[in-house]
Amino acid sequence: MKRQFDDILLGSIELFCLAGELSSFTAAATVAGVTPAAVSRSVSRLEERLGIRLFVRTTRRIRLTDGGRAYFEQCRQALAQLVEAEREATGQQVAPSGLLRISVPTTYGHYRVLPLLPRFRERYPGIQVDIHLGNRNIDFASEGYDLAIRVRALPDSSMISRQLEDAALVVVASPDYLRRHGEPRSLEELQAHNCIQFELPSSGKKIPWLFKEKGKDVESVTEGSYCFSDDVLGGVTLARHGAGVFQTYRFIVERELRDGTLVELLRPFSGRSRSFKLLYPHGRYVPFRVRTFVDFLLEQL
Image (cartoon, rainbow, N blue to C red; front, side, top):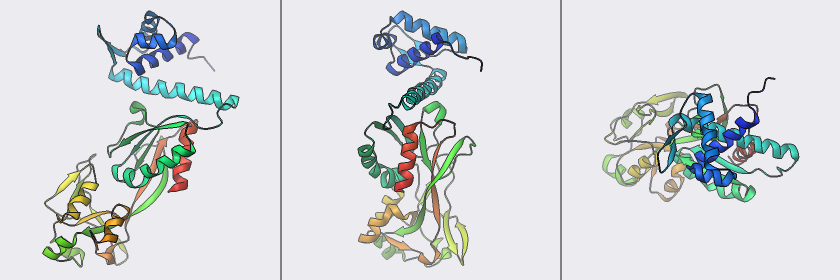
């Protein structure tokens, strides 16, 4: 196998990552025990090799360029994997450790994943968890995420997809709304009601409502005077305050259904669900902390 990196280049990558993390050549030099000029030369050496600028430099500060940020995230992960591989090889890695970066949808985060994290950290105190709570599709390579949970698997063959849960859907409205507008008893009657709409952030399309009718899966395109995006909990809040009818995940509204704040509708047409999947990059080497979190979630969910 032909060598791609010599010792000087690997050292330059380490100094570059330090400078990117600390946003300062001087601070990176202090941590590494070298001079700021040595850090600057290392970064220049990398820029010449790559043919791109890694930092925008001013007299007071430095910041990563877009290309520098993407390279930084990849290099940081690669260095962390080297450290972890060395620990495993020498038997030092008796417990998983390091920074775990995950991206989770708002609903699934609040109701499923976040309640489990204290238990996970108690079991694995060496792992620090950095959480992105949102519904946009993230870029694993450029943003440095280890894992994501999504309803729709990304069309990317380089991703591993693991099933977490089929989340049952339910149609709800408040008792006040039903007193004023009556209860729909069929999918046809539903069309006359104010159906709260959720718009997919990635496409701008409104999500069709899912039902079972006479044993067949059907989709219903509904209409309403409220439409929102990004956070499904907004629809639950609107429904709870009498704004209209809403289809959401049963696990979100279980408490409201128990205490009567919301009422389940169209039970004969229920039975549909959406699948939540755990996604992470496919590769020969999956960091120990990532494998640990995957196993923990599959165990819990």
